[in-house]
Length: 371
Image (cartoon, rainbow, N blue to C red):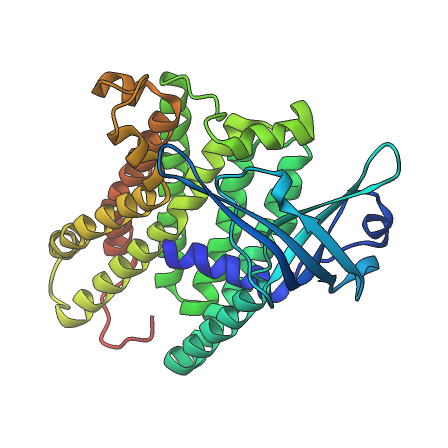
């Protein structure tokens, strides 16, 4: 799942680079790229707790927009920001420009410009996929592009228009599944069985996530991003629905892997054991599926734990109001991650018997691998 999420980000960077409209360029508030050409002042302030704040005054040269080739002075010595980065000559940065009521300009460095490195990483990723995967690798890149296109052009616009995020995420995921599996695996009966197995698992995951998010009184406001989004869109965004949609989409990649593996396993078992009954094939495939399942569940938990690592470290410090285990799991941020991980894992676990059953009874015994 981590690989799928990273791939989506890379595809976005490669095929949908951020652009600035003319209206944005003419606005008083804008963000543009600049290059550090000179460090005029560099101060390091050590606080009593050992933390260090960096204050810098720098000369910048604009690299795009209305500020291209213009020199700008940024005076960061007026701020005491603990998380501020230390910049050097030659670094490319993002600069925020705004106008005061008196017409004077204010500049603030938002952070490093990371897009060039990300573009190169995207190129390297595509190169490795093509070299190792060849034709199938090329198909997977096409699928990644289409996946992000569906998310960007269907799921997100529908949610912004007020549609149910849970329903739209299931419909969008089904579209992604059809394209992903048929393009990479071909138009075969095994592909169709895998698609419907994943769809059933996604629906069950959606029902479970809806029930337990209601039971645990999750609001969806546990993250800063959700609160910021509501600030921008007001009441038009169903934040709780976004939480449920995130669970569905997050589980999709792992369900894909499990379903394809089980379907192909059943197919090979029927090829090698033409005299075995459907029930015998089911039992044999389930033995392998259960072994595979343990590692996949662990993978899913590690993915969620990796994303939530700073949060886990914060709670391990046992500072108020997180002194006891009960206080920790009662916190909505922790409860959200628990529901997300456990519901996703339940959906993953159920996908194994569902896929194995459908494959065992709908894939016919054969003497060739044409299916």
